[in-house]
Length: 116
Image 1 (cartoon, rainbow, N blue to C red):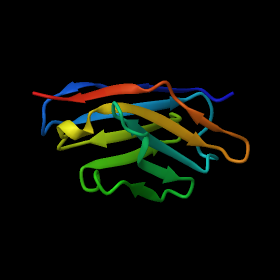
Image 2: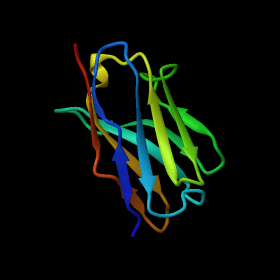
Image 3: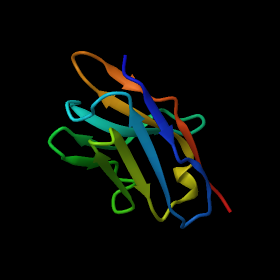
């Protein structure tokens, strides 16, 4: 069983920055992809960004140029650096690990609130 633990969420003003982290209980190098999803109240969970085993990154159009996903395989940690935050970025952010066909795993989520 893979465990993912997110941290770093909080309250930030519009235009501010925040970095959230996802620590995995096992090596992440072999995962097909590691990613961040978010879910705002009343909305479906959506992909924010992911990074494949080969290092390719993908971003939702709404965050391109503002968010950066990265990983530290030695620390078994994936990061999401969020800059120029907007109120519409407010959501619970979930870490995801795709180890298909063996399993897909989720963290418990971390709240990010962008408000003045």
